Image (cartoon, rainbow, N blue to C red; front, side):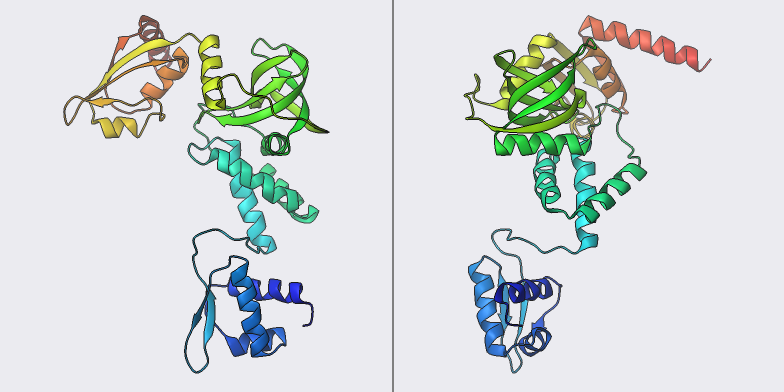
Length: 318
């Protein structure tokens, strides 16, 4: 094999198989001399691939874990499996991995051949995930389109449905995608309104990049997450949440979102005191899902709603 780039790719593909390859076997596979294999191994090391050599009469090579992640070669089945998994992680805002899922998915789908992209879409459309029901699902295609526009600093057009149902067309300069663990939001400069805005991604439709580049503007807060938190606080007044639980703090914390952190009182009890802009309905649902006895000390609106909800549920089981 005289084509050096092609030979290096074939060599890398072999080394990514979890086994040790004798130099003589690699040379035979690639139809080159053992000396050429040694030179190619050195080239891969220069590119950042941690290839380990073992000493001995025959000698061997294998790919090991390094300090950085170099590019990987994936076969068709591996690429489809990873894309489907990333779509599931990105589309349902899995806390802790959602933003990385979107970035990785955008990179992968950019280079997927059309035949594999079709297989990924077919698998996605044929499956129904079991979600927690406390956040809106988002089409992965929408997320990757927004992520690509953010990365490429391209103006973006899309349809948007406001909370009151009003439909509008928007032209924006996308700044960042932010996940709250329940929903995705786009922080962007709205060109038509000449101001910064936050958009719920599950209300975005038909996004497409215009191809027009822009120089990023300075966000008022300097941080997209802080700007989103401030915007949500304006839209939903904060309340003082005060709830005690007859359960250990670590048990309760594991069943609540990351921003709701209880404080231990004893080994078997804890109390949650915080200011939050979460809706009354959502708080009632999350507290019920903790699966432990609890007492609401405030706010009064939450107590009233839980009492009303309890009455409706009791009537439903009569």
